[in-house]
Each structure stands twice: as structure tokens, then as C-alpha cells.
Amino acid sequence: MKQSIGKKPAIIPTPVLIIGTYDKNGKANSMTAAWGGVCSSDPLSISFSVQRTRHTHEALLEKKECTISIPLAAHVKEADYFGVSSGRDRDKFSDTGLTPVRAPSVHAPYVNEFPIVIECKISNVVDVGVHDLFIAEVVDVLIEDTWMSEDGKPDLQKAPFFFYNPLDRSYYKTGEFLMQGFSTSNLFK
Image: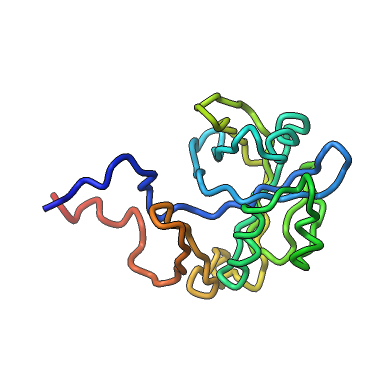
């Protein structure tokens, strides 16, 4: 039997997205966004929500470009810090010892130590309460070659990513292969 836990953000797992921007002074900044995911396959787009009070919000509206870096479990503390501190009064890269690198295709920084980087251009912004939903068209994806398998795809068993549980504000690690997707078309007929 299921029991009610009330109105909660119960999309689990929730990806940990590190949104990289340059602020109006040209300082590299990144923030953690847990509310996001792929929202269109054509044009390939990712959506993520940012509160209007966040320093990154202003940069996204002004620059219209960003990166989305995907961290490994080894950097869970740094990723959490990027979400709980503000680039208005902190240099998060300096504080954490992580390295900002200018993305090759968009005017935004990414986190060098994180293995997957998605370069994006903001295509739409939607007001959704205290957040704005940013829809970002994917320009390019960069993947650390040491995390690639022989067939040219990311090897998720080599790369221990993690996700966020918004119900209790905790993080968990991924990594176990279950099955190939899109392989069950004749299984249940």
C-alpha cells in the first residue's frame, strides 16, 4: 500500500548539473542545479530551473550561453558547495581548488575536473514561480577520453556519477549496468 507524503519534489533520481557562466565582470562562476534534464530531442535541448535571486540567473539572462558540467562522485562536496554558496561574494573555483576552463564553442566556463561538459545556448526562458526555467539548446558535448569505452560511448561503470535525492537532501552514487535500453520492443507482445 502506498502512503501520502504530501506535495514533494519526488523525481528521483535527480541529476546534479553544474551550470557554468561568466558574470557581468567576466568572473567564472558555477552553480548546482538539481531541477533539470533533457527536454527536446530536436533541437536537442536541456532545461534547468534557477531561482531569480541566484547570481547565475543574471548571467544566464545577460550572456545567453552556459555550460553544464557533470561531476563524478569524488567531487560531491565541491558540487554541493557550488549550490550552497553564491558567486556574488565567493570565488567558488578558488575556494574548491577546481579549475575553470573557457568552453570552445560558447562563452562560458566549465569545470575541468568533471568528465562531461555540455555547451549550450539559451533559447527560451519560462517563468515558473520563484524559478525561471531555462531551455538551453545543446551546441556540443565534451567527454573526458579516459571515461570512454572502446566503442566510443561513455562507460558509466568506469565513471561513478551521483544523483540528488530532493526528499531528504542527500546524494547517492550510480554505476551498475542493468540492461540495454530500447531492447524490449518484442518482449511484452
